[in-house]
Amino acid sequence: MNSAVPEGWKVRPIGDLVTLQYGKSPKEVMAEDGQYPVIGTGGVTGYASSYLYDGCTTVIGRKGTINKPSYVEGKFWAIDTTYFGTGYEAAEPKWFYYSLNSFDLSKYNEASGVPSLGRDTLNAIPLLTPPLPEQQKIAAILSSVDDVIEKTRAQIDKLKDLKTGMMQELLTKGIGHTEFKDSALGQIPASWDVRYISDLCSHIVDCVNKTAPVVDHVTPYKMIRTTNVRNGRIVMDGMRYVSQETFQAWSRRLALRAGDLIFTREAPVGECGLVRNANGLFLGQRTMVYRAAPEKLDSSFLLWSMLSEYCQNQIQDLSGGSTTPHLRVPDCGKILLKVPPLAEQREISSAIQSVATLLEQKEIKVAHVTGLKKALMQDLLTGKVRVNVRENETAVA
Image (cartoon, rainbow, N blue to C red; front, side, top):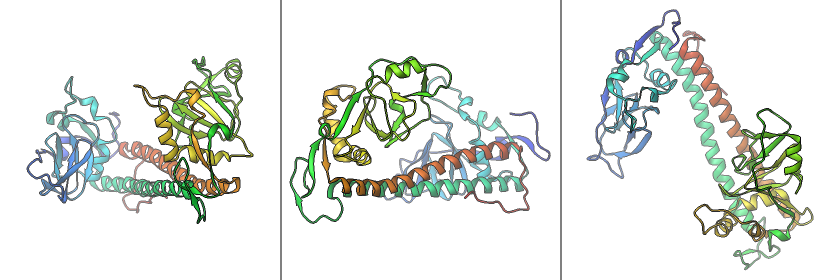
């Protein structure tokens, strides 16, 4: 802990701030219709017909997961591998929770096997402690940030459900159809067709199947690894850099361009993402590219089709039969697609993309606010930035 103590603050051991109680086994009160949450070392593990404590407090892992304290309000049961705090006369409960989460409790582990945190050890951990009014203000500010994160995550969950429902509906029934026919993929609109993906793409190209030599400095040339392909996107974070010579050698089969669909054949199988800006990008191991023939297939429609349940099921079937699932290059052209006319493909992909774009914006917001919270915790819990207890906190918008 930093030796500098802000004016008016004190360094106090946890044992001076709260009384740590042992959790108890809930086996006698566990119930499917229980109304009281049972809190374990990682959060809620079930529900009980009775409660062990009623109040605002923090539950801390005693054995197993010891570095993920949970904040609890109201009546709950804490299991026997946890502690929970009582007697908060000297500490604001939410401030105490944030303080514990500002550092890694696992460094106080006392066991060589299953992690363990003794009560005496926990009681002795020093916390930089402001006066109670300042604790309350700090807790209120950080809680307002948490509220924004929680509400945005709830919006993300709803958008994910909406996107899944739209994909299922639009990629199966299309827009405004009343007549349907049987096909190899079940019923489809009468004006649709079922085609092999190889018939709809101008190029289906595998990567160079050896590891490209990387460099330890930033260059304009970046390798797309399987970890960079997630949920319909090419994730730029964590890409490896190569020299111009390596880029040219590894791009010799096909130079990528915007609209290409990157597909992972292994580890994992079936992730897809559309290239938005192809400058300097090339395929890493276990990836391949589908390039839609523009007169037959809209590239965005190809993306959503490949991520659909009916395509993912085919991919899993084609890649089965081994301990490590992988899709063989000859099988990559055997995926069947439901194919509307081009104009309807674009209309369907536009509708799905509108929800996907909003979802991405919400996910970016959560990442931004989470980073802001981390910085705020560092500033407020160390006293680097002092709060004015006479002013109301402002929630993060």
